[in-house]
Image (cartoon, rainbow, N blue to C red; front, top):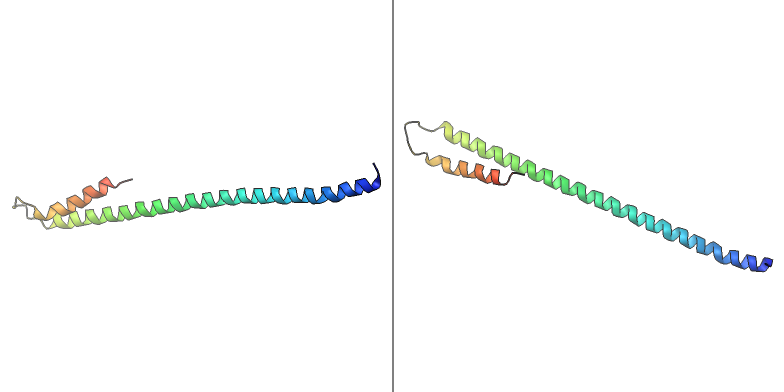
Length: 99
C-alpha cells in the first residue's frame, strides 16, 4: 500500500475508534446509572415499609395502652363492660394489619 492510502485509512479509523469508545463509555455509564437508580428505589421501598411497620407498632401499643387503661377502672361487680368494645376492636384491627 502506498503511504497516502495508509494515511487516509488512519485518518478515518482514528475518529471511528474514538466514536466507538465514546458510545461504549456512554452505554456503560447508562447501565451503571440504571443499577444505581434501581438500588435507590429498593432502599426507598424498604425505608417506607419500615416506617409503616413502626407506625403500626406504635398504633398497636396505643391500642393496648387504651385497653389497659379501660380495664384498670373496671368495677369487678358489674357484668357489662361497655368501655372495652372499642379498645378490643382497635387491637383486632391492628392484628389484621400485622406484616
